[in-house]
Image 1: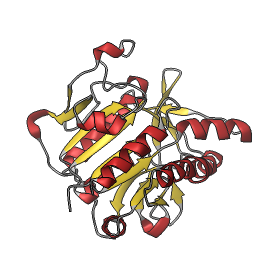
Image 2 (image 1 turned 120 degrees about the vertical axis):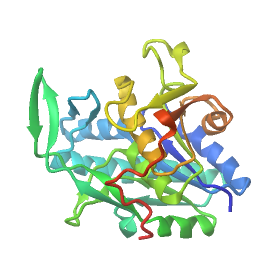
Image 3 (image 1 turned 180 degrees about the vertical axis):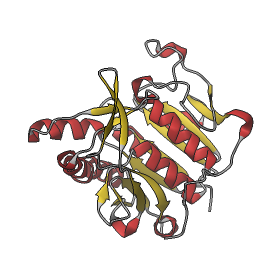
Image 4 (image 1 turned 90 degrees about the horizontal axis):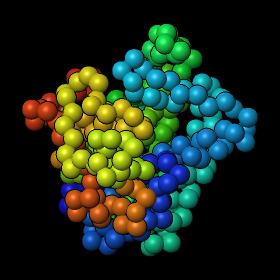
Length: 287
């Protein structure tokens, strides 16, 4: 079997899911195993507004921003991803002739996470500790389940939430979930599609896309604006987990995956070429 490609379809409303699915169909016709991981920020925001649930984000002291997932928001996340974003992708893949299987991290213990007991954030210039955030970091991937589906010719379509140590669901960042899946499968390539042509030297200038972006083995990523911080953290985790290469590319174009694989992307590399597995990860345990 050829090396697996993991594609993360961003939840940004500008990302074209139909174009992503058409590209994945092309890869499957070439018998290339593909896993599609998705978020759904636009669906989450829209559903939260309809349900009257306030949406908030938390900015960590290092400038990286993430969704604040209280109990109500966790319900919205699950409904939006499993009930809106995922069926849309499954329908598009089926229309393109692809046999796809939709999974959240709860199915078969696909994604297991360490629950965050506290989240440090900066609010109005003050550092605070948030304790009602139902989120976690993926520590284990049931790669055996994914390998079984891939071997049978299916495309797994994966999203949060994940299962925490206490057996209850937690939200987890979809980019970092994609990195964990890619590391668990020993993927050759992880493609992170977003609403920009790649990592921008100047967030206001799409012509400033970087062909290569180096990230340190730890610490704050070099760019944090426009949601890029978590993508670079995810890219670092994937590379440290043994993924061959990580590309951040434009999900708004007609052929997003093919163009990224052909070089229209920012390739993320580790400073110094370090590839040590992150010490707190337990990815690829075959569960």
